[in-house]
Image (cartoon, rainbow, N blue to C red; front, side, top):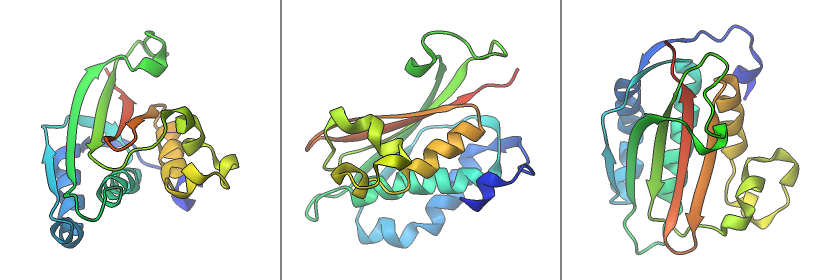
Length: 170
């Protein structure tokens, strides 16, 4: 969180495959403990802050791992596509760029879609939903620093999907 306040964040071309591989390696004990299956499609190289990518992906993956019932093995799918995110209203960003959308999808307990906007809002700390979604406000702030978007979709008892959308540089 303190890193977000820094104006000295360095944005550089980052191989997200290598970064994610390192994060998953560090989380190996938790993944094995939960007997989780994590599949990762090939991710692009994007101009990002390496410092902020770790808490972003780590938070979303940990949420997916912890949001399953005790007797259910977590299945997490991470994939990407280039296009225009729903939140962009079908318009390209100010530089005329498309977005790279990276989706982290899990088979967890899910949540009521009606409350999805509140999970990214720091003002709603007392809500029942936010108690289960700690860290997502940080993810929202990270995406704000990247001029991107984050949004979630979910169905109770079926799982959740979080999509982060980064502007592609030309």
